[in-house]
Image (cartoon, rainbow, N blue to C red):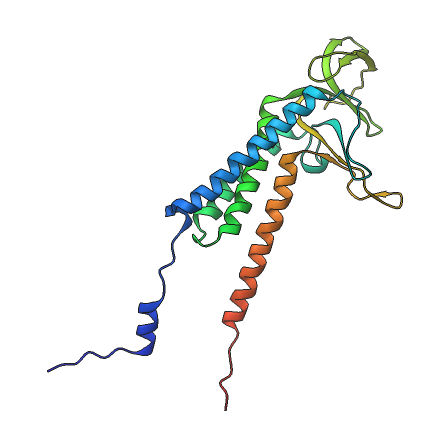
Length: 244
């Protein structure tokens, strides 16, 4: 007669809970896509409201000495970097969206904070990608680094007339430079300005939108998740000495 014996290791494996993946977990999808929908609606609605209700050169106080509303058009990426390279940013945004979906598909169902962070990143990326594929303004670049942006009203051989975005009101005449980047370009609508200063130094000199805020918060939470993952992996890999 044969007997079956079980080792402690086998018993531990049998008792270990089965890890569920987010891609096949309904609650994980709900967390991700509700965050995306909420974030995207908040971003697009506030952009439309700001450019409908605020005057082009108005600065409306939101919180005294802390934040105000001020319209701005950004032909670049986050913080206005890389102006004139919008096609590259569109491609980079698509790759970023695919990478976010990859991270979600390879995460466990218990990682709810990561799923919310991925939803915020998706909402921010889609919100600004929407602007870059639907919003266009005429951008005039000068060699001293300055630029003017607006709606094209009239273009001559040596001068150009631009009006307020997007309706073309209040036309203004500008000298037409020979910079090859000058012309119609995709833009992102920004309207939030941080007024807080440390002495004479602005704590946040860039005008931004809700999508930018979602991206910053989402990436920060993702980095915290990765940091905790690395910390726990290091702890599990560290040998533990048995008491004598």
